Length: 406
Image 1: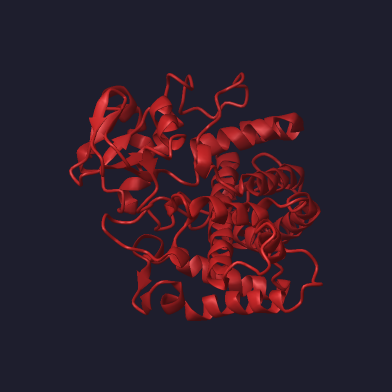
Image 2: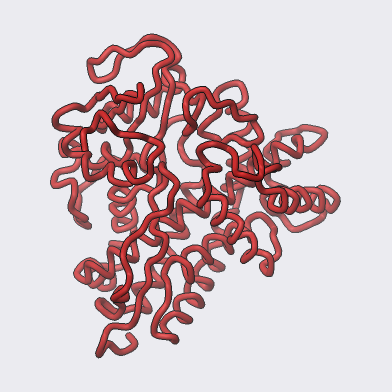
């Protein structure tokens, strides 16, 4: 494919961005696309964009140029000051308030074990649909104070939303915005908020932490803003972790040597998590808008130009990561990957995501021996249709012939 024809809203192209990363980094690290966007691929340049939100603003986010999205339907990555700071504090309170992540560690490990044991008992299953989707949504549901008997329904709603054009166009055939496009979903979230606000003695959850993070306000933030934060927590927190776990499990099945190394030395788990995130970033790229005339990588950019910061390419910059396409557990003090972003828009759920990934990985290597599972003969890798996300639709597995429970 001619790189200048790259379409950031075409999943068939964006999901292949890692395959053209080396060419972009070596030949045209700052590339003007036919669509009018400018794609930036080198690690240092992408890092500079992510850390300078005053020059590289977030207006428009992942949307097509000119599309207006009301604030209650936006992501944190689409907000600039003055809205961004206060709403980000609410999101941090929701996802990483005092004790929030650690309070979920035991639940995450127990749920991971139960889900994986069920797959092993059957001798087959889907490591996405039967494991990572269920796990991440149960964890998020618990964080939000959602009854566990409704977490499956909430998971279905999230999967449906991410399978539509909603993340890009903010509409479906039912209407524009969450309230019109997914009325049952938004009604459920609003009811959850109303119930929580009516019961201030309820056990601490995300809504309580949002209110606490509001910092001395005499009333809760507007319900639409609470809803916005919770939707981001649900969709962003579950989808990205779900996607990455699917990739990580698939990698271990394809690479039993990596599986064996981690199983033999659990101190390698953190390195496996970070190296996996580098190679398969759940968010492939972000889009920024130049707030003023500037330059990046020696190329002049005009005010209003929209820039694609290609995280998937930057994470494979050979100047930064020798042998960038290799999954190497022994990298010595590698620079931090950019998969969670940097700067003012650094992912608020990174601690929660890392905890879930670590616990799920440890359970997997505890219970599954290298080579014990294989993908089914009829399985092929398909990705979710959202252009900026990078997750497999499923990873269907079965016990390998002759393999015995580990």
